[in-house]
Length: 242
Ligand SMILES: [Zn+2]
Image 1 (cartoon, rainbow, N blue to C red):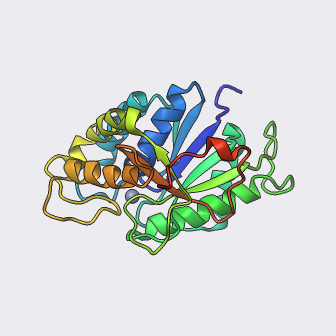
Image 2 (image 1 turned 60 degrees about the horizontal axis):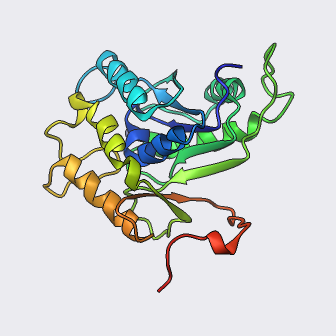
């Protein structure tokens, strides 16, 4: 199937994935893997711009990141629910794209849609593997191998399970974020990023540099997993201790 993916990022709003894991998506795509994005809503409740403008911006950002597939689930912005209808819609999209790894928002968030997206996304990943749940002609059950939570900008007392080195893709991440000029030009805050008075783009750079510093690299993106990560080769572990 042409929409089959290696890595899928699911988030509530267009621009969420660029802010939290755009570097990781670009890096994975650059490595030759098939990467996709599902935006759950169309951003119709956004204070700035319109849903139509954000759709055009999201398409441009997807091209910049090099993702193969970007879809919209059409669920209601600011009214996201983890209900049966929403789960079934997302289960169908997961079965259509068959991702091996899925990135979700962190389960705690400033915007209620971010919290709901994390729960809805995880439940849909599980349910997509149940053969008798919402079966569709021509679609096989599929359960992703791994679920990662994007931890960027969160202040919860949670240490990242790992940080992806995005130093080589940082410019690409910023170029994708800058596609959302209607949202971000002149802005001081966005999504889970609290205002400090500094320009938003500079704030994103500073935060990315902080996460990079945790693995002794210029720029990084942090992730959390509930399960303990398995390691094949201790000699290949990154992030020097001393
Ligand atoms: Zn958002």
